[in-house]
Length: 508
Image: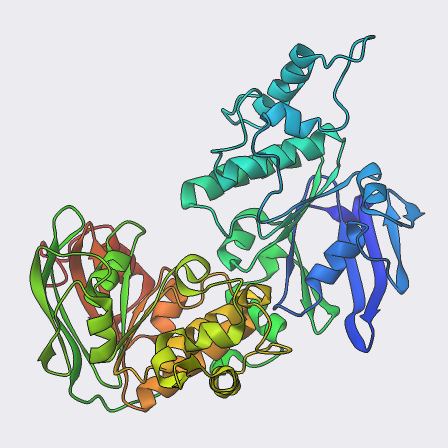
């Protein structure tokens, strides 16, 4: 896209914003053009959220200029931003569940007749036309209750378009979506590009940037530090600009001498889910369990830990057979499981960080029949320091933390049990690149100290960067066991798709 010949739809120049002594934004700069998807990237704390809130009229900048279609504007309220054609689509939509899609879209501005009665036929027709224009199969009269997050986001987009929005800010819209839902959202975004809507797209998933965006702005430490056409960048150059350091330390893979077998799985079978799963993980080794979504990777992890039942098979931890189907037995044997969905399965979001960090070892903290609050806080502080947790206080609810810091709390909670085997499912999903590097360093430190780590990951760069061996699953079977020296994306993907090498599967 040649943007030099057209006027920006939106420009932000030299914006700054401080909250007391904290300088959240130093030099916020951005330009959005009609008919483009523009990616805004940066670690948590880089200033992205503050910049977006300035565009949305939530915050007033201390300095800087906001220019819409060539005219400088000052927003006192979010309604001012809406009137200027700027709408924000958040990760988790805020709609009225017991109202229809049409009622949500036209809330407080329903068409009425001369008697003040709502003209539902007209409102439903307008809504259906908008939904059809977005290429989705939703019905205007459907209740919002029961709609998926993806469908609710489409409703929010339709609502924005009904307000004549020509700047759409999509803040982490794909974080809770499945792959088909992501593809549908991207199709909607492409349709909007065709109508000259300018889209600001915020994500931690770099593959989505290359799939959708034409231009990129990268922020670091409260300032915009790099502007580029997407085709000028690659994964490593983007990450390097975001973190401001050499990427040779991004995957801190250490050469570790492997010890005895820490985890041994033999012929584990759950009909219809996985079958004949056998592998070993040695002390000091990181083994990655790779494959496409639905291949059975997470289910194998849950079965090893005792969450899900199995029909047959055995698991040994440090040479001792584990009684399956009982998570408490797995914990006592020295197995820890960091689940894929940390918010739903790993944390009690309304509870303090200190309580979350101590949930796995509460019995150790009981004094005279009562849980010692001081011991909880001390434990959380100890693990917080080890894992570089960024939190003002361990008394704050876990739900107030960023995704990366929530993952550190879950890690700390399980490491407090002093496990011999760590099973970590999607260790860096939904967290920024700086937090990813810290999680990788933690994993490296753990194997240096003799822990056996089974890592489940959908990110091939992560698998190739951190694993000593890669086990690939396809339709519930392990189809390849690839050593680090022979692993590459092509081989892993071929095994994930069930393809064969020289007429035989890659794993016996």
